[in-house]
Amino acid sequence: MRPETENWDWSIKAIDDPKTVNAWAMAGGKMAIYSGLPIQLKASDDELAQVLGHEIAHALANHSAEKMSVAMASSIGVVAVGIASERKGLALTGAALAAALAVQRPNSRTAESEADRIGIELAAKAGYDPRAAITLWQKMAQVGGKGPPEFFSTHPSPENREKKLAEYVPEMMPYYEQKGDRPYYKL
Image (cartoon, rainbow, N blue to C red; front, side):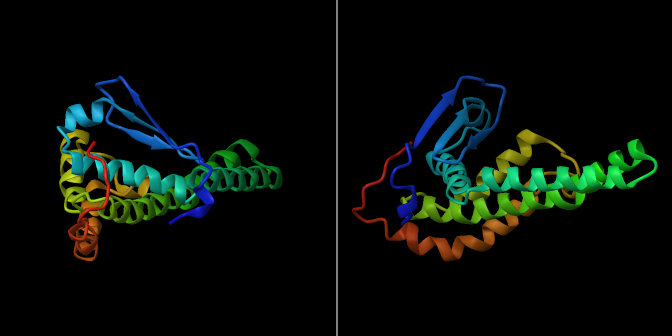
């Protein structure tokens, strides 16, 4: 499906840290999952496939490069505001806060939402139940507790994620139901 990734050296490393519920991906297909994610969530294979699909989606969508570009552009803007201001310290602090809240965090939430959409499709096409995306985020909300308001976060709230993923499930079910004899791997 993605010929530009044909030469990527895809790999997943398991990090033995039972307290950390996380996973991540970098451009080029390098990924990691912390042991705390399957342990604390008591995640099913279908739920783990949603996590890995999401992380694969970050790599495919080149989100790490986008994040660096946004951070660099924000830094340039913050410095420009500081140079132009008579009260440089206050201006730099205010500009940095504004850049984080108005540019960087919404951009990160957009990337997360895009990875959710691509990831649920990848998992369904690989033969994993897309309804597991909903149960995954229900479990994440229980383990994560009350986070900051979404406006202050780099990620969509678990409730909003769960709701959006539920909207995708009917579209993804035909992929899952057509799994037939295709080869796929249970996690």
